[in-house]
Amino acid sequence: ELFDLLTKVIDESDITSTLRVAGGWVRDKLLATEEFKRNSSSNPKGVDRLTSKFKGPSMGRQGTKVIGAFESGSVSSLSLVDPKDVPVDIDIALDDMLGREFADHLNDWLTQHGQKKITVGVVLKNPEKSKHLETATMKVGKFWIDFVNLRAEEYTEDSRIPDLMRIGSAEEDSFRRDLTINSLFYNINTGEVEDFTGRGFDDLKRGVVATPLPPLTTLLDDPLRVLRSVRFAARLRFTMDESLINAATDEKVRIALGQKVARERVGSEVDLMLRSQDPVGAMRLLINLKLASTVFPICDIVNCKNGELGNSIFDGGLNLLTTTHNHLCDCKINTPVWCESKVVTASATNGVSEMILIKDEESRRRLWYAAFLKPLRDHFKQVGQTEKAKAGKRQGKKASRSVIVKLMVDELKRPLRDAEAVEKIMKAADDFTGLLNAGCDLSATTCLLGRIQVVYHGKDDESGHITCHMGKTAVDSDTESDPLWTHAMEFRLLVSKVLERVGPLWRAAMILSLSEQLAVLEQEQYSYTIEGDVFEEAQGEAREGILQKYDSFAGALMQLGLVGIWSQQPLIDGREMKSDDILPNVISGPIFREIMNEQMDWMTTHPGGSKESLVEHLRSVFDEFV
Image (cartoon, rainbow, N blue to C red):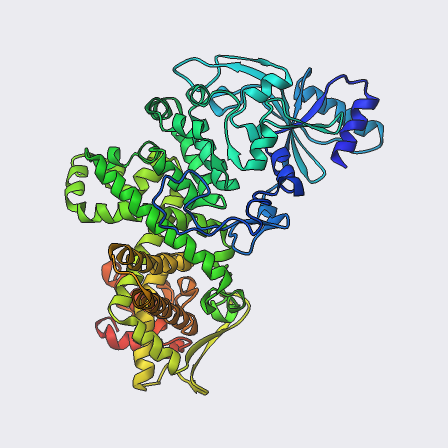
């Protein structure tokens, strides 16, 4: 429909331009056809699920768990990323006029045929933002269209921004692109796909990431392309071409990446890698290509001179990310109760709108950051006193920021909210681990067996009320003194402190805590030389024990109405607290904060309790202000 419209504009406006769809749209459309099904002949069942502990020279598909094998033109049930969620935007290249000129012709045609004009946005030339020629943008139907020019370019040694940029031919444009699979054109005028490099079709069929020109030249011209190569290998689950691997590991490329590419662009590529179908494969590629220390310059942050420290942190991060990612993929097939969509109801979440992690792309992305960078934070905690002493000599707020914030905000240029969310996940994961190591899984099991429930009744977090139950018996939380109930409420208060800090990211933190335990178990497995059914059976039992412990713990949180507790509002606000009927002689300051905290603790241990009972409790505890 879109292409028919554009063809009519060309035919009826006496335009001589050839319109070509460029780049990713052509690639992805071809991949969806039967002819380009990956591995259709050599591996009809899809890509094998290889062990996540593969230690060989993985450069793409090998050595990572499959999360998005193509089956019948779509992604398998193991995928956490649905390609259908990707917005449709199309780049259309023109050979003899500017995009703005063609957009004007399109609007003239629409006006002549009684249709409304479409607003045109013009992105002016801005080399610093990789906009080397003017671009016209408009939304035609459901498609966002960028009208661009075919171009040719030349580079200088000290910059990734082309020194010479001009409108070029289709062949010149194809060869200046980063990868052969991105150099294909769909000619709208003729209805044919064009492969000017002579390699695009073949590489797409073979599942190979390669460059149109000699790879070392391509990467040195624009070092960002090495990260784009990694990203596309991870996104499409392709293998990197051997010559591209050799060029990517060249020290000159690493130096150029550090000197010529803005940190914003590096951070943006990392973020896209972690949004891809295979974030594990992307991070593994960065490590195996020896790019990790350039992309994540942790030694510059913590002043470490020992390269082995960085290597051990990256290896630990990759192991934890692999375990976390694999476990979440398994949860999509064998879903624990606390990860099921049907349990995320208003009654189970205190009326707070919540999304399960399998469907929450933003929380998943932040979880991948947290898993990969957790060993860095753990190392920093061990040497924290020394580092804080160094930081204390500097002035300003930046001196006291954590290593995670410094890396993500200063080096990767990610938003502060992302860095803070990643730290929340890490801290809460440690808190959950500490609670379980202290025996809270037994308290959780007691609550489940005792069928102790806190149920919210209402559609949102403002208009509902709470009821409490022990088995089939309703409980008055104001007066109930049964030891089982008292113990359950003490457990509820303890866990609520963690949930209040982590908020909606609690599921990500729980998965990270669980994955750390599984990763330790896997490391123990690979540290033994014993083989046989007995050892494997013991490992399987240990793994099952960990899963059951966390399932019970998370199940108890939901049954006790703790999900959404971070939205709990006090029954008595600050002004009313000072009224004659409550604590008229209370003074402002730390003691007032202590009183408000005591109120929230009472509400947590007396869910649905009355305001009268709360007032009586506060007047009893803080009788000096009555």
